[in-house]
Length: 175
Image 1 (cartoon, one colour):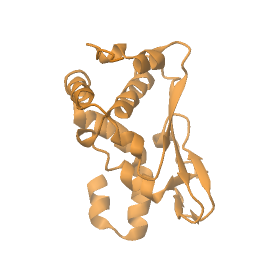
Image 2 (cartoon, one colour):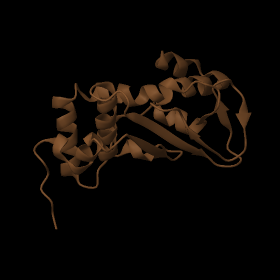
Image 3 (cartoon, rainbow, N blue to C red):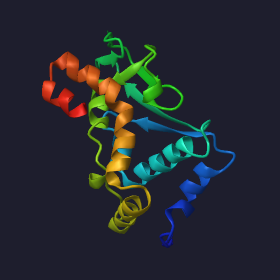
C-alpha cells in the first residue's frame, strides 16, 4: 500500500510518537559513517527530538550512541586513546553536556558528524526527500539551522581529533 505524504510533518507517525507524553527521549545509534544523519527522515526525527528538548519538554533527552570496534583508535575528551571495543553513550541531552571524561567518540564518527549536510541527505523516495527539505526550509528556520543543531553535538570530539592530527584548516572551519 502507498501511504499519502502528510501535509504537516508534525503529523507523521514518528513526530507524534516523539511528542507523546509517554515518550521521554530518543537515542540515535551511529555507525562509523554516521549513516542515520545521511537520511532525510532521520534528520527530521532529530529536528523534532531537539525541538522537544529545547522548547516544551526540557526533561526530554536526545542521546547519540557510537560503537568503536576493537582496534579502532578512539579519542576521549581528555586526549587519551583506547583500542578496546567501546559503546559511547554521550550523556543525557547530547554531546554538548557530555565532556565529563568518561567516554568519547570514535574519530570517524566525530569527523563525519561535523560534516553532516541535510542538503545531501537521501530518502528511498525522492518525493519524501523534497517534502522534508521543503518543510525544514519553511517551518524549521532553514536547512542551515538544522545542520548546525546536529553538527554541534560532534564539535568537541572532532576538535580533539583535528588537534591530534594537526589539521589546522579543519579546526579553523569548526571555529
